[in-house]
Length: 414
Ligand code: ATP
Ligand code: MG
Image (cartoon, rainbow, N blue to C red; front, side):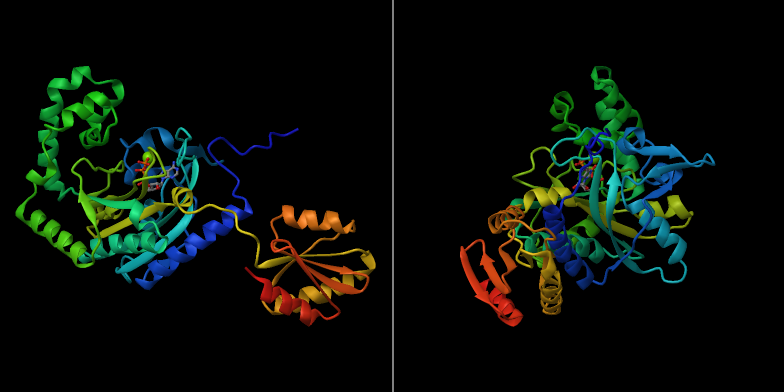
């Protein structure tokens, strides 16, 4: 016997979850496309080099979370851990020269070998968007505006807060990083190996450490806002005033740094205040201008964000609803299947879905089966008559005519 469970950290998405997933995606897609973004579908497998370069050698993802394997010709390939790198590669190869201003969105599975826990899987879905070619801070605000609109439409506004930080240009950050290093230097001997590594490779990541000792050092640590140039400060002010204009609430958080190396300028997260525990970030993003040079050798502008769909599913109401869009159809005699096909065709024409049960058994069993499968309506063809059962309101209706059956189903919807 084969082991029937999915791989650890991965799960089967059953129909009820898929229905909920589609409803959420319908909202996300509508909002995103109303801002002029268009969908791209990019490969799940990319060269390992792409992620090493873009996500960054010192990031947790590249260090220990990627699913990497050698193809039969020894090329090193990786299951994508995030969508920005692939989307960027596609943009650079297809659009950068001919149509450099692009707004793109994607949806798909991502893979990271993390410790599975609530809101953290090894295979998870991200919706993400990327805008290319624009320097003006209006686009930073646009991306936050989109995320904010999505969460409002999903009725999550009261539970979600947008946190911001401004990392400035690479030059600003260089100076700041030097200051941070000098600040932490006297304490490094007391750090564990993970934090020693962060200190050496990516000192910014000390700011979002959960380690108690590191956290106790943070209140006195230098803050990036004190190192911003006049130009940085102006841009950041403009962004904040635009957010206010669009009535988007936010909090500034100088400890917010992203785990990926490629961010600069404005970065943001939307965090849920309730319902997700430690994994409370549902959306994260920021400016990724540096990636353009890293991947193409040319300067360019870009930014984006990604939303973790599973975390959204945990937050939105996950009750299983009765299947109203489909009816359960059966008969007491196999020689009546032709009548069932007729009913099916007629209901399908009226956009009413039909689940025919091919099996003959007692009426009670048929109705139990329909109820267990969560149908509101069941239709039986019994003794040459149609009987419509409303399993929620516990009513029944009989007729000879398919048209009556349809009208009754239509009128019984709750
Ligand atoms: P976290 O701090 O939770 O590890 P991250 O900084 O690694 O998140 P990003 O790489 O920015 O996350 O991904 C964007 C979003 O994708 C996250 O905010 C989260 O909603 C979702 N996400 C990231 N990793 C996972 C995972 N392992 N399982 C489920 N969702 C995830
Ligand atoms: Mg992570």
